[in-house]
Image (tube, rainbow, N blue to C red):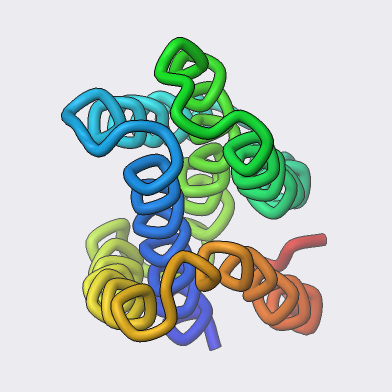
Length: 167
């Protein structure tokens, strides 16, 4: 179950990243600053998530569900406001917290960090392609739907017992 969970988390995180990036591209600025805001915010959030205690994963997952909706809602109300990019970067960082806390909390469920990274990374690669294709086919509405995938992750994480469980 641990490899499947890592794969699904990677898939979901990739979709979140693509969704947030595309939302910033469409609603804020279709230039380098939105790419930089997404990348820098995600990296800062991931690094901060590595420092959370192992039991901080549920909080980080909750923020990863809430922050994208705050970002998307704010972009709807204040489109084409590049002056708000620092605020948007903060929301991306809050979303990225779970990426770092995931690795810290799930490491006990795997025999090596490389194995955890292998499964999460393969899910991430598939998620990049799937979410990009979904946005191409159905538009930016996908960004509003993708964070809901955390419900599946929460359900899977709560049913797991032992190392790597959410509780």
